[in-house]
Image (tube, rainbow, N blue to C red; front, side):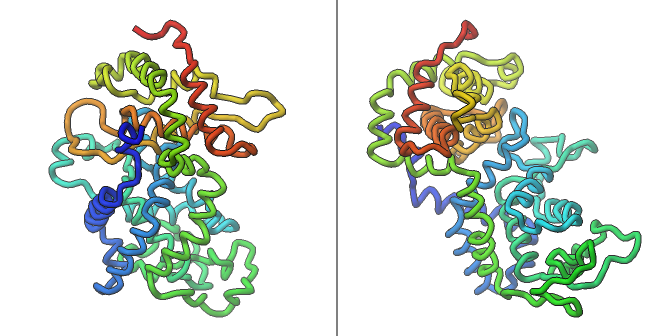
Length: 379
Protein backbone atom coordinates (compact mmCIF):
# COMPACT_ATOMS: atom_id res chain seq x y z
CA UNK A 1 0.00 0.00 0.00
CA UNK A 2 2.91 2.29 0.66
CA UNK A 3 3.93 1.81 -3.00
CA UNK A 4 0.39 2.69 -4.14
CA UNK A 5 0.42 5.84 -2.03
CA UNK A 6 4.02 6.86 -2.75
CA UNK A 7 2.92 10.07 -4.50
CA UNK A 8 0.98 11.17 -1.38
CA UNK A 9 3.60 10.36 1.25
CA UNK A 10 5.85 13.15 2.44
CA UNK A 11 8.81 13.64 0.16
CA UNK A 12 11.32 16.20 1.40
CA UNK A 13 12.87 16.62 -2.03
CA UNK A 14 9.48 17.07 -3.72
CA UNK A 15 8.43 19.68 -1.17
CA UNK A 16 11.73 21.51 -1.59
CA UNK A 17 11.10 21.68 -5.34
CA UNK A 18 7.55 22.93 -4.77
CA UNK A 19 8.78 25.62 -2.36
CA UNK A 20 11.45 26.75 -4.83
CA UNK A 21 8.89 26.91 -7.64
CA UNK A 22 6.46 28.94 -5.53
CA UNK A 23 9.22 31.31 -4.40
CA UNK A 24 10.21 31.93 -8.02
CA UNK A 25 6.59 32.63 -8.89
CA UNK A 26 6.22 34.98 -5.91
CA UNK A 27 9.15 37.00 -7.28
CA UNK A 28 7.02 38.00 -10.29
CA UNK A 29 5.13 40.22 -7.84
CA UNK A 30 6.81 43.03 -5.86
CA UNK A 31 5.67 41.87 -2.41
CA UNK A 32 8.90 40.02 -1.63
CA UNK A 33 11.07 43.01 -2.56
CA UNK A 34 8.85 45.42 -0.61
CA UNK A 35 8.77 43.41 2.60
CA UNK A 36 12.34 42.02 2.48
CA UNK A 37 14.75 44.64 1.20
CA UNK A 38 18.15 43.03 1.83
CA UNK A 39 19.57 39.63 0.82
CA UNK A 40 19.90 38.60 4.47
CA UNK A 41 16.27 39.42 5.21
CA UNK A 42 15.13 37.66 2.03
CA UNK A 43 17.09 34.55 2.99
CA UNK A 44 15.48 34.51 6.45
CA UNK A 45 12.04 35.00 4.90
CA UNK A 46 12.56 32.10 2.48
CA UNK A 47 13.49 29.85 5.41
CA UNK A 48 10.37 30.95 7.31
CA UNK A 49 8.14 30.21 4.31
CA UNK A 50 9.73 26.76 4.06
CA UNK A 51 9.05 26.20 7.77
CA UNK A 52 5.34 26.96 7.39
CA UNK A 53 4.87 25.74 3.82
CA UNK A 54 2.63 22.78 4.59
CA UNK A 55 0.33 24.79 6.87
CA UNK A 56 0.05 27.67 4.38
CA UNK A 57 -0.69 25.23 1.54
CA UNK A 58 -3.43 23.53 3.56
CA UNK A 59 -5.04 26.87 4.36
CA UNK A 60 -4.88 27.96 0.73
CA UNK A 61 -6.46 24.74 -0.56
CA UNK A 62 -9.23 24.96 2.04
CA UNK A 63 -10.24 28.55 1.30
CA UNK A 64 -9.69 28.34 -2.46
CA UNK A 65 -12.44 25.70 -2.49
CA UNK A 66 -14.68 27.52 0.01
CA UNK A 67 -17.07 29.11 -2.50
CA UNK A 68 -15.75 27.67 -5.75
CA UNK A 69 -17.59 26.00 -8.58
CA UNK A 70 -16.23 23.19 -10.75
CA UNK A 71 -12.82 24.06 -12.11
CA UNK A 72 -11.91 26.89 -9.72
CA UNK A 73 -11.22 24.93 -6.53
CA UNK A 74 -7.52 25.85 -6.77
CA UNK A 75 -8.05 29.53 -7.44
CA UNK A 76 -8.80 31.96 -4.62
CA UNK A 77 -10.91 35.05 -5.19
CA UNK A 78 -11.15 38.20 -3.08
CA UNK A 79 -14.23 36.93 -1.23
CA UNK A 80 -12.40 33.77 -0.17
CA UNK A 81 -9.39 35.78 0.99
CA UNK A 82 -11.78 37.96 2.98
CA UNK A 83 -13.33 34.85 4.54
CA UNK A 84 -9.86 33.70 5.61
CA UNK A 85 -9.07 37.08 7.21
CA UNK A 86 -12.46 37.09 8.95
CA UNK A 87 -12.08 33.56 10.35
CA UNK A 88 -8.59 34.12 11.75
CA UNK A 89 -10.09 37.18 13.55
CA UNK A 90 -7.18 39.38 12.55
CA UNK A 91 -9.10 42.59 13.25
CA UNK A 92 -12.38 41.37 14.78
CA UNK A 93 -13.71 44.81 15.80
CA UNK A 94 -13.11 46.81 12.65
CA UNK A 95 -15.69 47.62 10.00
CA UNK A 96 -13.22 49.18 7.58
CA UNK A 97 -11.15 46.18 6.55
CA UNK A 98 -12.98 45.03 3.40
CA UNK A 99 -11.49 47.58 1.03
CA UNK A 100 -8.00 47.01 2.41
CA UNK A 101 -8.39 43.25 1.81
CA UNK A 102 -9.28 44.01 -1.80
CA UNK A 103 -6.14 46.15 -2.13
CA UNK A 104 -4.01 43.37 -0.61
CA UNK A 105 -5.67 40.84 -2.93
CA UNK A 106 -5.04 42.91 -6.06
CA UNK A 107 -1.48 43.78 -5.08
CA UNK A 108 -0.60 40.17 -4.18
CA UNK A 109 -1.83 38.43 -7.34
CA UNK A 110 0.85 37.13 -9.69
CA UNK A 111 0.71 38.80 -13.12
CA UNK A 112 0.17 36.38 -16.00
CA UNK A 113 3.14 35.67 -18.26
CA UNK A 114 3.00 36.35 -21.99
CA UNK A 115 2.61 32.61 -22.62
CA UNK A 116 -0.28 32.39 -20.15
CA UNK A 117 -1.98 35.38 -21.73
CA UNK A 118 -1.66 33.76 -25.16
CA UNK A 119 -2.95 30.38 -23.93
CA UNK A 120 -5.83 31.96 -22.00
CA UNK A 121 -7.31 34.91 -23.95
CA UNK A 122 -10.01 35.33 -21.28
CA UNK A 123 -7.35 36.93 -19.01
CA UNK A 124 -7.64 40.13 -21.05
CA UNK A 125 -11.43 40.01 -21.32
CA UNK A 126 -13.14 43.01 -19.64
CA UNK A 127 -15.36 40.71 -17.59
CA UNK A 128 -12.52 38.49 -16.34
CA UNK A 129 -12.57 38.06 -12.55
CA UNK A 130 -9.09 38.10 -11.02
CA UNK A 131 -8.12 35.02 -9.03
CA UNK A 132 -5.14 34.20 -6.84
CA UNK A 133 -2.92 31.14 -7.05
CA UNK A 134 -0.96 29.70 -4.13
CA UNK A 135 2.15 31.93 -4.50
CA UNK A 136 -0.20 34.91 -4.69
CA UNK A 137 -1.82 33.80 -1.43
CA UNK A 138 1.64 33.57 0.16
CA UNK A 139 2.21 37.18 -0.94
CA UNK A 140 -1.08 38.18 0.67
CA UNK A 141 -0.07 36.46 3.92
CA UNK A 142 3.21 38.40 3.93
CA UNK A 143 1.30 41.66 3.47
CA UNK A 144 -1.14 40.75 6.24
CA UNK A 145 1.72 39.84 8.58
CA UNK A 146 3.41 43.13 7.74
CA UNK A 147 0.13 44.96 8.29
CA UNK A 148 -0.39 43.36 11.69
CA UNK A 149 3.09 43.47 13.19
CA UNK A 150 5.14 46.07 11.29
CA UNK A 151 2.89 48.67 9.60
CA UNK A 152 0.84 49.35 12.68
CA UNK A 153 -0.67 52.55 11.28
CA UNK A 154 -1.57 55.77 13.09
CA UNK A 155 -4.43 57.35 15.00
CA UNK A 156 -5.10 59.73 12.12
CA UNK A 157 -8.65 59.56 10.71
CA UNK A 158 -9.44 59.28 7.02
CA UNK A 159 -10.25 62.59 5.33
CA UNK A 160 -14.00 62.99 4.80
CA UNK A 161 -15.18 61.33 1.57
CA UNK A 162 -11.94 59.38 1.06
CA UNK A 163 -12.07 55.61 0.67
CA UNK A 164 -9.69 52.91 1.84
CA UNK A 165 -9.22 52.14 -1.86
CA UNK A 166 -7.17 55.34 -2.08
CA UNK A 167 -4.49 53.96 0.19
CA UNK A 168 -0.99 54.54 -1.21
CA UNK A 169 0.05 51.41 -3.13
CA UNK A 170 3.66 52.41 -3.82
CA UNK A 171 4.58 53.00 -0.17
CA UNK A 172 3.28 49.82 1.46
CA UNK A 173 5.30 50.36 4.62
CA UNK A 174 3.39 53.60 5.23
CA UNK A 175 -0.02 51.96 4.86
CA UNK A 176 -2.46 53.70 7.19
CA UNK A 177 -4.59 51.22 9.12
CA UNK A 178 -7.16 53.85 10.11
CA UNK A 179 -7.29 52.57 13.65
CA UNK A 180 -7.57 48.85 12.93
CA UNK A 181 -5.77 48.26 16.22
CA UNK A 182 -8.15 50.54 18.08
CA UNK A 183 -6.20 53.81 17.81
CA UNK A 184 -8.98 55.40 15.79
CA UNK A 185 -11.81 52.92 16.10
CA UNK A 186 -15.31 53.46 14.80
CA UNK A 187 -16.60 54.60 18.18
CA UNK A 188 -13.60 56.84 18.82
CA UNK A 189 -12.42 54.86 21.81
CA UNK A 190 -8.69 54.52 22.28
CA UNK A 191 -6.70 51.34 22.69
CA UNK A 192 -4.95 50.58 25.94
CA UNK A 193 -2.12 49.01 24.03
CA UNK A 194 -1.57 51.75 21.53
CA UNK A 195 -2.65 54.90 23.31
CA UNK A 196 -4.67 57.69 21.72
CA UNK A 197 -2.13 60.34 20.84
CA UNK A 198 0.57 58.64 18.76
CA UNK A 199 1.01 55.97 16.12
CA UNK A 200 1.24 52.41 17.37
CA UNK A 201 4.86 51.26 17.32
CA UNK A 202 5.81 48.16 15.33
CA UNK A 203 5.98 44.96 17.37
CA UNK A 204 8.81 43.70 15.15
CA UNK A 205 10.82 45.11 12.27
CA UNK A 206 11.73 41.85 10.54
CA UNK A 207 9.24 40.33 8.07
CA UNK A 208 10.39 36.77 8.78
CA UNK A 209 9.63 37.24 12.48
CA UNK A 210 6.33 38.92 11.60
CA UNK A 211 5.36 35.91 9.47
CA UNK A 212 6.28 33.51 12.28
CA UNK A 213 4.11 35.46 14.73
CA UNK A 214 1.26 35.59 12.22
CA UNK A 215 1.39 31.82 11.82
CA UNK A 216 1.56 31.12 15.57
CA UNK A 217 -1.12 33.62 16.59
CA UNK A 218 -3.60 33.19 13.74
CA UNK A 219 -2.93 30.45 11.16
CA UNK A 220 -1.98 27.47 13.32
CA UNK A 221 -4.94 28.04 15.71
CA UNK A 222 -7.16 28.26 12.61
CA UNK A 223 -5.97 24.83 11.44
CA UNK A 224 -6.72 23.37 14.88
CA UNK A 225 -10.21 24.94 14.90
CA UNK A 226 -11.41 24.43 11.33
CA UNK A 227 -8.99 22.41 9.18
CA UNK A 228 -9.21 19.08 10.95
CA UNK A 229 -8.96 17.27 7.62
CA UNK A 230 -5.27 18.25 7.58
CA UNK A 231 -4.71 15.56 10.24
CA UNK A 232 -5.35 13.01 7.51
CA UNK A 233 -2.34 14.17 5.51
CA UNK A 234 -0.11 12.83 8.26
CA UNK A 235 -2.32 9.84 9.07
CA UNK A 236 -2.12 8.34 5.55
CA UNK A 237 1.62 7.90 6.05
CA UNK A 238 1.22 5.75 9.17
CA UNK A 239 1.50 1.96 8.99
CA UNK A 240 -1.87 1.31 10.66
CA UNK A 241 -3.84 3.53 8.24
CA UNK A 242 -1.99 2.18 5.21
CA UNK A 243 -2.67 -1.40 6.39
CA UNK A 244 -6.38 -0.61 6.79
CA UNK A 245 -6.57 0.82 3.26
CA UNK A 246 -4.67 -2.20 1.91
CA UNK A 247 -7.33 -4.50 3.38
CA UNK A 248 -9.92 -2.69 1.23
CA UNK A 249 -7.69 -1.94 -1.77
CA UNK A 250 -9.59 -3.98 -4.36
CA UNK A 251 -12.97 -2.59 -3.26
CA UNK A 252 -11.64 0.96 -3.40
CA UNK A 253 -10.17 0.41 -6.87
CA UNK A 254 -13.47 -1.02 -8.08
CA UNK A 255 -15.41 2.00 -6.80
CA UNK A 256 -12.85 4.38 -8.25
CA UNK A 257 -13.14 2.85 -11.72
CA UNK A 258 -16.94 2.54 -11.50
CA UNK A 259 -17.42 6.22 -10.71
CA UNK A 260 -14.72 7.38 -13.11
CA UNK A 261 -17.12 6.28 -15.86
CA UNK A 262 -19.66 8.89 -14.76
CA UNK A 263 -19.01 12.23 -16.44
CA UNK A 264 -21.29 15.17 -17.02
CA UNK A 265 -21.67 16.36 -20.65
CA UNK A 266 -19.75 19.51 -19.72
CA UNK A 267 -16.82 17.49 -18.36
CA UNK A 268 -16.77 15.21 -21.40
CA UNK A 269 -16.74 18.26 -23.67
CA UNK A 270 -13.82 19.64 -21.62
CA UNK A 271 -11.84 16.44 -22.18
CA UNK A 272 -12.41 14.43 -19.00
CA UNK A 273 -10.47 11.16 -19.02
CA UNK A 274 -13.02 8.51 -18.05
CA UNK A 275 -10.50 5.72 -17.42
CA UNK A 276 -8.10 6.68 -14.67
CA UNK A 277 -9.30 9.81 -12.88
CA UNK A 278 -12.32 11.15 -11.00
CA UNK A 279 -13.71 14.62 -11.60
CA UNK A 280 -15.10 16.61 -8.69
CA UNK A 281 -18.63 15.78 -9.92
CA UNK A 282 -17.93 12.04 -9.95
CA UNK A 283 -16.26 12.22 -6.54
CA UNK A 284 -19.26 14.13 -5.16
CA UNK A 285 -21.64 11.47 -6.54
CA UNK A 286 -19.65 8.72 -4.85
CA UNK A 287 -19.62 10.48 -1.49
CA UNK A 288 -23.36 11.17 -1.77
CA UNK A 289 -24.05 7.52 -2.59
CA UNK A 290 -21.90 6.42 0.35
CA UNK A 291 -24.25 8.13 2.80
CA UNK A 292 -21.48 10.25 4.33
CA UNK A 293 -23.13 13.57 3.43
CA UNK A 294 -25.30 15.03 6.20
CA UNK A 295 -25.79 13.77 9.76
CA UNK A 296 -26.37 10.29 11.12
CA UNK A 297 -28.91 11.58 13.65
CA UNK A 298 -29.85 14.76 15.46
CA UNK A 299 -28.04 13.56 18.59
CA UNK A 300 -24.68 12.92 16.94
CA UNK A 301 -22.30 15.66 15.78
CA UNK A 302 -21.10 14.08 12.56
CA UNK A 303 -22.37 16.35 9.82
CA UNK A 304 -20.45 16.37 6.55
CA UNK A 305 -21.31 19.10 4.05
CA UNK A 306 -20.94 19.38 0.28
CA UNK A 307 -18.55 22.26 0.90
CA UNK A 308 -16.31 20.02 3.01
CA UNK A 309 -16.47 17.36 0.29
CA UNK A 310 -15.30 19.90 -2.27
CA UNK A 311 -12.55 21.09 0.08
CA UNK A 312 -11.36 17.50 0.66
CA UNK A 313 -11.17 16.99 -3.11
CA UNK A 314 -9.09 20.16 -3.49
CA UNK A 315 -6.87 19.52 -0.47
CA UNK A 316 -5.96 16.00 -1.62
CA UNK A 317 -4.59 17.28 -4.93
CA UNK A 318 -0.90 16.78 -5.55
CA UNK A 319 1.47 19.04 -7.42
CA UNK A 320 0.86 19.39 -11.15
CA UNK A 321 3.57 18.11 -13.45
CA UNK A 322 3.74 19.67 -16.87
CA UNK A 323 0.28 20.98 -17.74
CA UNK A 324 -0.80 23.54 -20.25
CA UNK A 325 -2.62 20.99 -22.38
CA UNK A 326 -6.18 20.98 -23.64
CA UNK A 327 -9.03 19.70 -21.47
CA UNK A 328 -9.60 19.56 -17.74
CA UNK A 329 -6.70 20.77 -15.60
CA UNK A 330 -4.77 18.45 -13.31
CA UNK A 331 -6.40 20.02 -10.26
CA UNK A 332 -9.87 19.25 -11.64
CA UNK A 333 -9.04 15.53 -11.78
CA UNK A 334 -8.26 13.06 -9.00
CA UNK A 335 -6.00 10.01 -9.38
CA UNK A 336 -6.25 6.96 -7.12
CA UNK A 337 -3.72 8.00 -4.42
CA UNK A 338 -5.46 11.40 -4.20
CA UNK A 339 -8.79 9.55 -3.94
CA UNK A 340 -7.52 7.55 -0.94
CA UNK A 341 -6.23 10.67 0.80
CA UNK A 342 -9.55 12.46 0.18
CA UNK A 343 -11.40 9.58 1.87
CA UNK A 344 -9.10 9.93 4.88
CA UNK A 345 -9.77 13.67 5.00
CA UNK A 346 -13.53 13.13 4.85
CA UNK A 347 -13.37 10.68 7.75
CA UNK A 348 -11.50 13.20 9.87
CA UNK A 349 -13.94 15.96 8.89
CA UNK A 350 -17.15 14.00 9.48
CA UNK A 351 -16.22 12.83 12.94
CA UNK A 352 -13.97 15.74 13.88
CA UNK A 353 -15.66 16.27 17.25
CA UNK A 354 -16.07 12.61 18.11
CA UNK A 355 -14.03 10.54 20.59
CA UNK A 356 -12.98 7.94 17.99
CA UNK A 357 -9.28 7.55 17.21
CA UNK A 358 -8.19 8.89 13.83
CA UNK A 359 -7.81 5.37 12.42
CA UNK A 360 -11.45 4.53 13.20
CA UNK A 361 -12.68 7.79 11.67
CA UNK A 362 -10.82 7.08 8.45
CA UNK A 363 -11.93 3.43 8.45
CA UNK A 364 -15.56 4.54 8.82
CA UNK A 365 -15.28 6.71 5.71
CA UNK A 366 -13.45 3.94 3.84
CA UNK A 367 -16.18 1.38 4.57
CA UNK A 368 -18.91 3.82 3.56
CA UNK A 369 -17.19 4.44 0.21
CA UNK A 370 -16.64 0.72 -0.39
CA UNK A 371 -20.37 0.06 0.21
CA UNK A 372 -21.64 2.91 -1.97
CA UNK A 373 -24.18 1.94 -4.66
CA UNK A 374 -24.17 4.08 -7.83
CA UNK A 375 -28.01 4.19 -8.10
CA UNK A 376 -27.95 3.36 -11.80
CA UNK A 377 -26.14 6.50 -12.94
CA UNK A 378 -23.02 4.91 -14.45
CA UNK A 379 -22.76 4.29 -18.16
